[in-house]
Image (tube, rainbow, N blue to C red; front, side, top):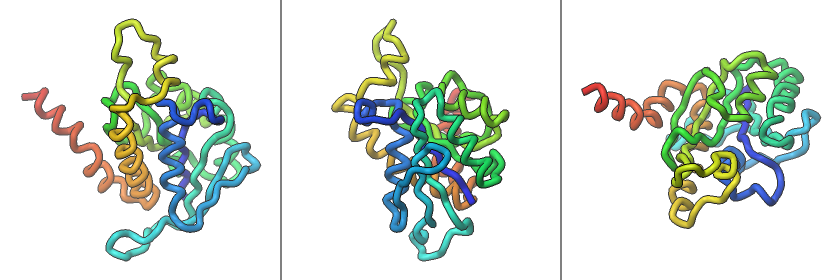
Length: 207
């Protein structure tokens, strides 16, 4: 079993904000047949099912996938994630967390295994409740505030601009694809595909 958690804030007020990219990826992933979000005893909305066949028609190697949208606010995400993992007797390495990231330019996707919270309150809460950061993340770039002095907290709770929306919509689809590959256990393949721009940039800096 694998657990894919999309981070966000519940309620219509936050639906279109930058901080809710994780929810949008979870919703996109749950469009596969058989997934329906239901309230779980953990407090989160959870959709359980199997991933659809790959483009070549083959089945994924992993059985049940849980797609999760915590319903506490962002800084409380770890409470529900922790309860859900404990109930299913799963370790942190079964967890894939999809979240917005200020340090990546808008629309860029990066997969990361382990690490700290980087100032992200949702990740901070999950790490605090699990006692470890040893889980996989799908980072979806939202970029830094364009104006000097603009508060980052206000920026992440603001909607995407008209110019950004097509870019983010494409990124949501790619992040959902990345999460599906990770849930199937295709980690190396996913990193080779979605982290390629990062490696190229590092190579250019080294030269």
